[in-house]
Image 1 (cartoon, rainbow over the protein chains, first blue to last red):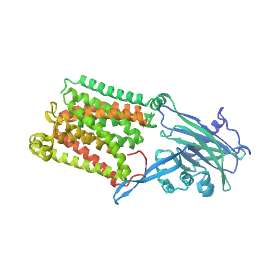
Image 2 (spheres, each protein chain N blue to C red; image 1 turned 135 degrees about the horizontal axis):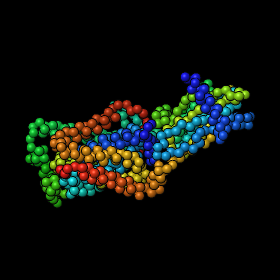
Image 3 (cartoon, chains in turn blue, brown; image 1 turned 45 degrees about the vertical axis):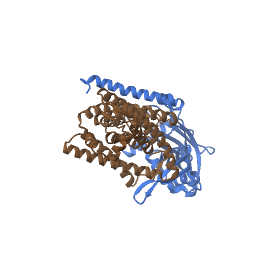
Image 4 (cartoon, rainbow over the protein chains, first blue to last red; image 1 turned 30 degrees about the horizontal axis):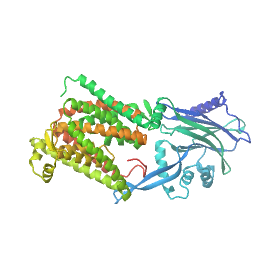
Length: 261
Length: 309
């Protein structure tokens, strides 16, 4: 069954690669890899419930790969919890990170440790160790990064999946890359980048990247526009609707009752 | 997730039926006890993945609907003391502003969060325990209403209340006391509510019952009337200053809560005052117990986003 599913995925990748509009060019020495993402644009409407993004690629022979779906980096401020008087868990201090990406989903074709040395991975920002070093350059809050990663993983925004990127042999030894990014419904709107890293003989480099856009559409976009553009009117509108709904239910229920108490 | 809807301000998807169901439970409690239910709804919303600031603001909007529905139901049966409600509201608004200022001061001094939480737990524990045993004793003895029993004892508090100027009659509550009292108590509850970040419904209730000596059947409706205006103010301010009111979230919650509030108001009329007080005491003690557990048990994560509760 598993074998069938695997061959199914491979067939799917091949069919997408050969279909019009999704044709993947074969890599050459100048461009050692090519990737496509499907879809490139994601519409977050009223019924948006997250979305899986397929990443398809081809890479010259001899590479192991890492596929990274990454969002813009922002400053992040948090509170640290600790024990007060030895019994009570309270907020005991502030923690800040200079640059935390809004999304960080990494899939590799092999275990991280076998791709390159920790120093190379850290330099490329591959893996949590590298991310932690970038997040708080020279600061003392790096030690709290694993806890932040746990929160982000629970939110579905961070993931490190070793071995989840499939690297299948293609014609002429060209590797076929197949991976996915599972965008949760909490994914912030905006631009993302899907990056394909190649690792060979202990060295690693960014081979190519693609843009991915998540944007609000339909009524969700209209409401967000009202909230941002006309906050006071939106506030009054929200209150009027709530009062009207409350009174309407009162009238309906009151109408059904025989007489008021 | 099936039947999920994307919330444009919270920027996450949640099951529609979960929100409507949650709204109806909290609406029921609102109609039954005259509380806003923010103390219950906001933590649950945060638990299902709504950002804390959006959860608190959208909950205020939902409470507007539930309390409008509840106030209407209670007003029809003549159990809203509008005069008392307006005085409490005026005090509450002033107290709320003072509370916001006070919290800034406490933060500067340091360890504000610690003292706020401890104050909350101690206050809720005291109110809940007192209400529970007082009502239980009253139910057992099957004596005269608590209001009269308490009034017979001349205490320092009673003498203080009698000495205040601007005495006025509140016909709905059948009491005569100084107009300064509801203003002062409203102010006190407003300060506490602002510090603790809640609407203050379940601090206001014991204040009305034990300090203003209002009859139980008027307390619930009057509390809802006051909460209605407090939350209208909060919703508009949150929308204007923080852009955190999610209309889709609020609409789904209020769909359940307005119906729940009507059912709650009906059940409230059928229960005896002491039964209602005991149930209220259990809810207050439950909230206190939950807060105490949060303080004592190791948290799931040792970091929390700033702006959370």
